[in-house]
Image 1 (cartoon, one colour):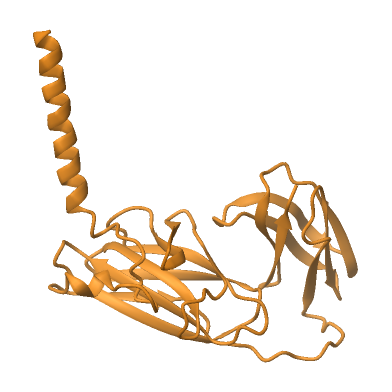
Image 2: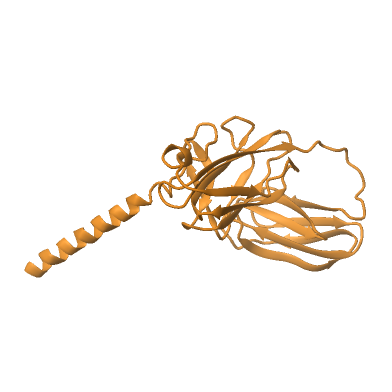
Length: 261
């Protein structure tokens, strides 16, 4: 009995230490504080002493609807304690497109920020995530980032970047340097037909990614023949949203694919 009591006391002590340690880092792991409309700005509210700079790159001045962009966030001076980011339609509370995580970031969802992203570890010098731009007609998109560096009282950054929707162009034949990509049917419940068209033989890579930016399947990698090339995808994965991407000669096109089995 005495040994049991001692074990319980030790367990409670460990839990108390864990709670105190976790609480001391709670501000760094806060979510829903990117500074976007309807959210707080934790990076400004309780920090600010110290030096350091945060730079966000890869968010385009002008975006192509339904295109995938790699966004990078880096810190100079002190490392990133953490950051929150979200993308909105103009100055509204509505999301613009979809943020996707990577090996250094993870997605979170709270009532005021249903599609946010943050680093998946503390004290990184850089991190990256993906932005799938919205479909045509959404208009201006704004990326909000609230970042904190160093210790609890370290430097903070509140960043807002603007991207305008590219003007639509009328349909025309593909130029020799262009490619096209389509998914049919969409949504689908067992298999999908992936078609891509090129005007000249060229190297091409066609792959499927999940919403976390992880590779699900490589459908094609090699020399594509001119004209229409058709591939079949029979997913052995869970239902949900996926992204089919073709990369060829430095160009990338991404299409959403909804698997609903």
